[in-house]
Length: 271
Ligand SMILES: [Zn+2]
Image (cartoon, rainbow, N blue to C red; front, side, top):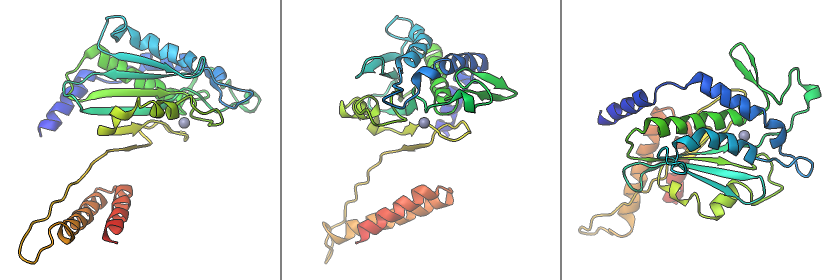
């Protein structure tokens, strides 16, 4: 109940997505899409072109300018090909929630094969059109708007909120540029303790997350009693019993993926 109240208070404070602000940012990003096509060696993206627009939106609410709480970290491994980590600090140390994967490169587009210019935003009714609108510059803009709103409205949150905008997602022939390098450097280690939403889609529809993970761990201790082998059989049976029930809980929540993965785990444990 308390959780619901807090969630609705945050919702109220953040308000609705500002349509004009979002569309104007998407237009700037799609305007760069020609230069962030990823198909080496001919086309090497310059993701910093996107980083610059995101930073323009967030810097006024950041510690870099003294204008707000957002902490911006532009991490670059190859010239013009940066990643951007944005953090909105929470009040409780160790509590963290993250959005990762909004990538700033796009797949190639041949304008001759398109009915409209892929490299500039056009609006057709309620459709936003252009290379990268969903995959993934639209999501870059969406999460930028969220972070900007957090920075501006400054709600008191227990969890730190982190957004990781990445370079080089569409092609892996040049390694050490994007998320692989960030992981190797340990820059995403702190995200492991909280829920992580992977934000990207290759389909036509916008989405709020294509994948993600919530890390959890369960420690089961057996009970020593007459003829009981507390350090062996009973803890594993307890764990088995718990996982089966947990799997059914997810099944009834229609979360089949979680259910299947838990079933798999119970099978592994029971061997
Ligand atoms: Zn994508």
